[in-house]
Image (cartoon, rainbow, N blue to C red; front, side):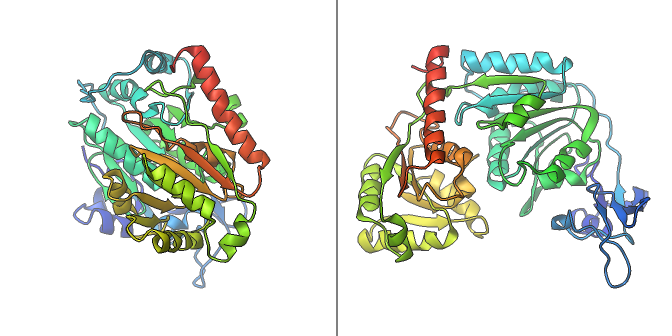
Length: 434
């Protein structure tokens, strides 16, 4: 089983990713086809483009993040080799709760009844572990699986947890800054990478379906549709699904409580009336610093900021007042981003000052959460709920807290707090938390 089977790549991509493969034996198709209208249809993403380079060739601007594809090029592919049924073992040593296990088993049983499924579970409910029986079932039947997410951090975390729990399986990982070619039966990738496949996967699992840039993006929905076998299934995972998604799936399974049976931390709102004025002056209000130091007495802290420039402001202010603090900043294009996330997991920082890049899909043990300027437009309701869900995800109870710092009690903040409280109420009624 070759990792490259099933991928549709340009000649330049074959030379970069698989330089020893002889593409003379590959199937070859035009990279862009003529259409009835003016322009060309991209055979990678399916978009129609009328854009041309000075030499007169058409190119596709829609999937250019994967590298430019133009009408004078070809795509090369090796058809996938049929896989045989086999025994697949899982080395995960944990145990699903009764509620988790009921959903996991029902999801397996319902595969013959429909094609679209949603696991609607609160942050930290153990959605990934609930997938293990389904994944094991598909692999044992010789079927192919893609697990995808809009976020690089989520993909890295999923790949780590899968390789730890399925130690005998070859699991590939693809995103903009990394390619691990382990095999083609099971891949973990960002959604854009799926444009390199065509009708390949029997099962696609889409984590964080409501996250940017996938949410409300018909273009990326095409990546899922084009890479899936015609009769394949899609499983969506979300803690904050949209009403449209809830209406569109065939089956929905809801879990309002976490696997460790503790309630979700309900955010405390810290009002700071002159917050924006202080931040514009490059200062942190004393009340914010005091709250941070209080949180640090019991846990490390994820400190969320609404913009990249604020990261350095917060860092400098904190070090001026407490020079011995161990802290750092991280954002999407930070070259040391992956290292810093691992360092935070290893408790090498007391404070990780971050943008919304860490709002979902990452798990740290023993952290509280502080959101600076929670009324900022970048923090919509889903973001506030997701960020709040970083606290008390795993490990023994350490009284982790969530604090929203704001100059005004906005409707969005009220909605986020209300949703968390409602999930706790539903979980108590269902008997899934203490």
